[in-house]
Amino acid sequence: MPKKTIGLDQQLYDYLLSVSLREPEILQQLRQETANHPRGVMQISPEQGQFLALLIQLIGAKKTLEIGVFTGYSATVVALALPADGKIIACDISEEFTAIARRYWHLAGVSDKIDLRLAPALETLDQLLASGQTETFDFAFIDADKENYYQYYEQALKLVRPGGLIAIDNVLWSGQVADSQIQDDSTQAIRAFNTNLHQDKRVTLSLVPIADGLTIALKR
Image (tube, rainbow, N blue to C red; front, side, top):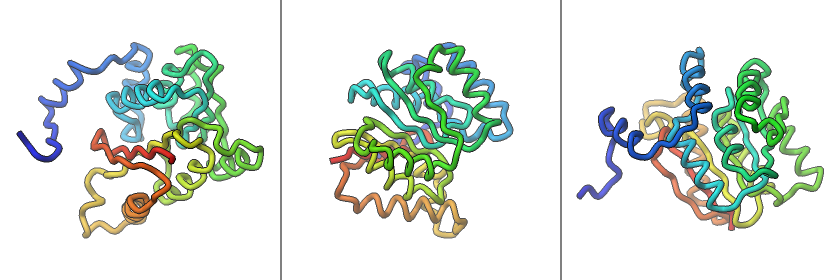
C-alpha cells in the first residue's frame, strides 16, 4: 500500500465521483454554467463542496462566513447543509459574478439564508468585529484574492468561536507552491500563508489534498 497520498488520474477521479458524489441537480446546473464562464477555473470542485457540507453538519454550524463568492457554488452547498435557521454572511466585490449566485440561491430556495455584502471583504470583516460579532461564527470559508489570505484568516479567527472551523482553498495552488522557480505575488503569498499557519498554535491544522488543496483549521 502507498505510504503517501495517491495521485488521481482521470479514470480514478471519475471513479471517486461515481461512488461518493451526491450532488443535487441545482448544484450540477450551477457548476455546468460556471464551467462555461471565462473565469470558470475559480469554481470549487463538486467533491470539495460535498466535503464542506459534511464539515458544516459535523460541527452543527448555524452561522457561517464566506470570503469570496464568485458564482455561488460553495455558498449554495453550505446553505443547503445549514439548518432552516442557518445564516451565511457572504463577502464579494463583484455584482456581475454574484448576480449568477443570487439567481441560483433563489432557485435552490436558500436566498433567505445568505446575506451578501458587496464590499472589500476586509471592510466587511472589520464591521462585523466592530458590531460585537467576535467569536459568534461556527465556520468560515476563505477563497478570494491570495495576497490578502493571511489578513482574511486573522480576521476570521477572531470571528469564529473556539471549536469552530476555518477552511482555506487553493493552498496547493496547482502545485506551484512547491516550485521555487515560480515567484509571482499570488504564489509567494500562499507559500507565506502556509508557512505561517503551520506555526500557528491557536489552531489544530490539517491540509487536505482535495481539489486545489484545502486547509482546515480548528480554533482552539
